[in-house]
Image (cartoon, each protein chain N blue to C red):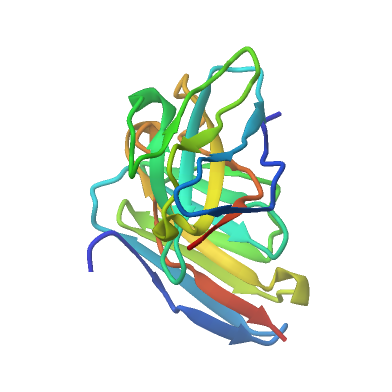
Length: 113
Length: 112
């Protein structure tokens, strides 16, 4: 699949579980992002990676841990989440400091029970 | 701090009518503005960006720095324009690694 691919599409996890979200892009982009989309709230930036280096951590709790092993892959490791963390998690990538805009994935719908 | 305001959560028009989706921003740096659209059951996608001054699917948007606005306009709405529209603000100076601040979105419904 071209563009940005996110897996899984849906995830239900208990508060004591550990899970990971995966994002993959083969567009040759050099920046990748995690955003959180909750009901009735704007998209919230979580993390920014540029050239595989984390350049922004937008005051995200430590129960969310990102990882960018190479320029094509981005992970979001989750542990001991809270029910209020239930949301749609979107991955995006961009080139040239985002001058041409983002390419978004379809998102992972996370439900914490 | 960056802030984007889309004052209308919902906007309804009839087919063929003009439509304007409002977006105001607050930013002390050099702004770069985008409109993103999400059609039903599709992913969020870029519609247009102010720097390219283009018209996409009949939509245009002009950056007005004096009024700090970037309203999205189309003279004749079509039913297929029904979607969620997000205004987004970045930094044109290239210092923020492309991070964007999004508005809350406006749901546009075009009735036949």
